[in-house]
Figure 1 (cartoon, helix red, strand yellow):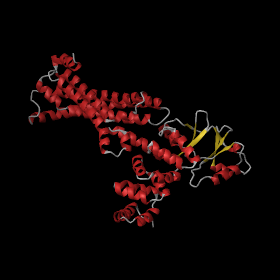
Figure 2 (cartoon, one colour):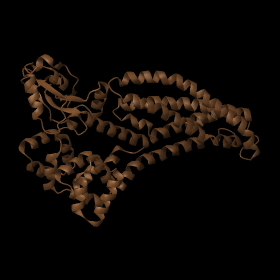
Figure 3 (spheres, helix red, strand yellow):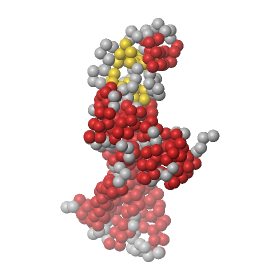
Figure 4 (cartoon, helix red, strand yellow):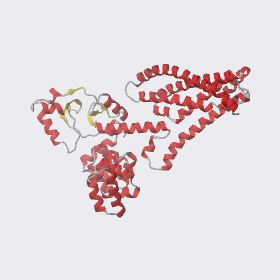
Length: 475
């Protein structure tokens, strides 16, 4: 019966603590690489180094293929360059290229020199592509045959493929290696041996280009429900293929990047184990937010003389409500639109449809929130006055109207901001996930507070309404 990961971890830790390398190696031989990656992730640095040292090259390769980028970089540092050559030999080409990217130029050259010429040339070709492009994530391991080849020849080629090769299609190419079509394995096993591939191949298959972004590749494979997609260059020549397991990794990576951006940090934090650098990624956003809140404070202060002082103090009490509601409303809309922009080819059309849907929703929500805020003030203001938190001179009905109208306008303006920023970011080549981050939340707070004080000053300021406008606009 197979042990669960917790039991395996306990046994591995015991072996690591007593330094029993032989026992540790024997334990690790039976562990699935995915479980081994989980164990690696919770060990301390010294135990991680011991674990990697105890693994044979094939097992080390399987472990590295399962690790995320930051952990893979750390694991590679623990492997001697000469041993790393053996590990790279055991890896699939796309995983091997990822490992080589973690090395210095000198280490990379040394490892490549230790490899067979054919494998070294293939890896150098992969390293020419951007690591987040289709060329950077593809594998050149595939089966491509001339159109005139027969089913028997294709079946023989599949049988001769390397052990563990992920074969879903046999590709047909012309004399210049340009992709013509593909033959699913299902058709191979149901066709006669002397049938030509040209007669059963699927022509004009869905393809991606070597320079396509990995997120676009994932979207295309998801859209067309593909397990594998061929990769071609600008001349239509077949360069490699991308399989479903690569797409799962891409989807996880892209989702993690979006979450990091929406949380107000940088995707680079995924690749970095330094606490100081991780803190620097987060601080840059927090400092920007601090500047934004300072602007909000200046807006509040600028209305100090726009209304009677006792009324001004009452208005200030509801500033957190305005900022929070406006910010939350903007986040809701921007998050929905960011998702629409991330789903593929018709992003521009989708966002117009989403905005057309969001406008009536906002027109329902804004007055509802305004009415709720007005009710809170109408019934709550007498209690606040009786508790000495608000001066008795503050007019109940006017304060109710100011807060209710201010809330309505604040949500409307914040919603407009939430609708427009994701599209603008996308248009200018910035990840729209930033539109749901703390910086834009702070912008929503500023807009909401400004809207509230402008409306509130007009209602409560009486003859001082003009003063409120000129003070807010800086005239």
